[in-house]
Image 1: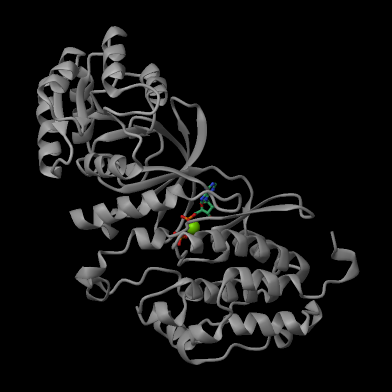
Image 2 (image 1 turned 90 degrees about the vertical axis):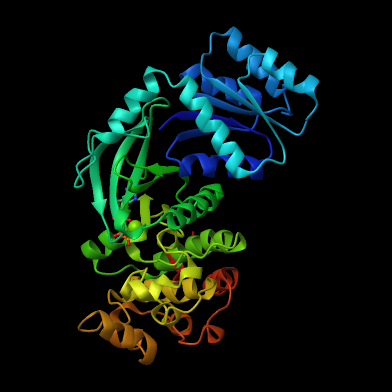
Length: 427
Ligand SMILES: Nc1ncnc2c1ncn2[C@@H]1O[C@H](COP(=O)(O)OP(=O)(O)OP(=O)(O)O)[C@@H](O)[C@H]1O
Ligand SMILES: [Mg+2]
């Protein structure tokens, strides 16, 4: 495991290199501009720098020259479309150790990186390799530093997919939450690759009501982890445990925020797949709650490659049974309308305190989702005075056939905005 900095202003090319290097278990930082790269270099030494020649603020070759002038001893590989002998010798004279011309094959880049690391591997690298060999305890990562930068503190909670810890970025001194996923969900290189590309897509999204994903990596014992914004507050599941249910104007306001977050995710072609009360964090005052949706697309991160059709072979279902759409139960392809169904389950539960479908066991719950109609909300809790249009809307979200549900989150938001509210609850 080496520490590598990749500097390229073309996001696609940079991503390719980063994924490739992370696949080989290296710790990778990435920068778009030379000035950002210099900021990274100011924080610590790297084993290798992979530098694009054409950068917006300074050429990769000048960056290399400056790195050497500042006493940098790591390896430097220049990646460039320039193929003349003069350019290559300019780069090497500036202090680069090797040069690869675009378009390059993945195999060539990997071999050059490995050759450079063999030559330049210093004490830092061998120390890290030794650490890799010492297997971490499976049960807890508290006290460990993951990827050389995330110092793990106490456990915050545990779910079906892994364990969440409070942690600290040791260089930036920022508090983060780290979710270490069960590694038995990831079985081969193809799954690892998929995990990485999905995690990258998720981390590119940014919305005030979506928990921000900052980074991802692998623990020394090969469990995937994601690093995200640390949130203080209570999940909707905890609120339901304490309060039973949520007053309907508050439920509407929470769902409107969730619709906005999910509309953003859906516009970016990401389906959440695991909407449920424990994935919604509420903080702030009851009058003006801040709502954040967690675990976007996370269950997909752990799915095996679709081309292998191993989903059914392994007999694994990714999602939470009480909130899974009929199409998820049938392991059919899902789209954003599956999220609509799970939103229906969530809305039903926070309004009434009961989930719409719960069987005596896993398969029985699935049968109900696929075949039964839920009880009317007004029958469960007449005293909640849930308006008729809100009940109708909730039941529509729970339609078995995706075509019969509300079709988009923006449409749902607009329908929720039309539900009459009691005078005392208007902002
Ligand atoms: N970003 C975060 N900041 C602070 N606490 C968090 C964060 N993410 C999760 N938690 C806490 O960790 C608990 C466990 O979360 P986790 O996602 O592992 O479980 P879950 O949502 O119940 O199940 P699943 O694995 O299906 O998502 C949450 O209930 C919450 O209290
Ligand atoms: Mg969760």
